Image (cartoon, rainbow, N blue to C red; front, side):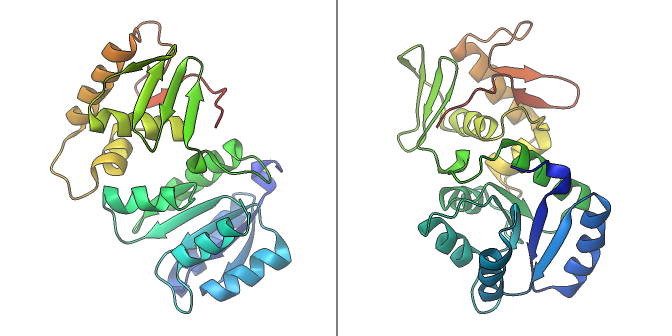
Length: 238
C-alpha cells in the first residue's frame, strides 16, 4: 500500500455540491481524487485507474453503492471502501460491514471526520486481500471474536458477554490502533436514533474489562484516555 498521504481516492457521489466541496479538500490533504457520479461509472473508474480507496455513496442512479460494493467483493476486488449514506441505524451499518465495507459514515458529516476515516482505513488495509470487515474471526493476542457465532474466547476458553458488549468489542477490533470517541461508538453500535447516552458505552467497556480481566491501569486489550478508546493490541489476524 502506498503512503496514505499520496493515495488515489475515487469519490463516488451524484450530489455535485458534495463532490465540489470534498474534491479540493482531499486534494489539499495530499490525495489525488477521481470522480464518478453513478455506480456503473464507478466500476469503470476502478477498472481503469485502480484507486487505493473508494468513498462510495449508497443512494445513486443506475447502480447503487451497495451493488457496486457487492460487485467488487464478488470478483475478488478488496479495494478499501468507505460507504456514505443518509441512513444512520446500527442495523444499516452492520449490513454494510457484512457486505464488505471497510467503514461507514452517515450524512451529513464533517470533512475532517471523513479524512480521519480515510487515513485510518488506508493504514490498516492490506493490498490484494480481504479487509478486517470480511473476517469471520478476529484475533488479538489471546482474544478471539468469532463474529457469526458472536462467541468471544480468551486463552481458548469462552467468556460470556452481553450482546451490546460483543458489538462494542467487534467495532474496536475492526478499528485497531484508532482512537474512538464514546460518541462514535454510541453512533456505530446503538445508532443515531437510539435513546442512549455515553454512559451506556462506559457501562459496556466496564463489562469488557471485568469479563476479559483487563486492568484499566495496565490494559492489555482496551486503552482509555481523554480522547476516547482504542484496542491496544494491533497484531490482528483474520
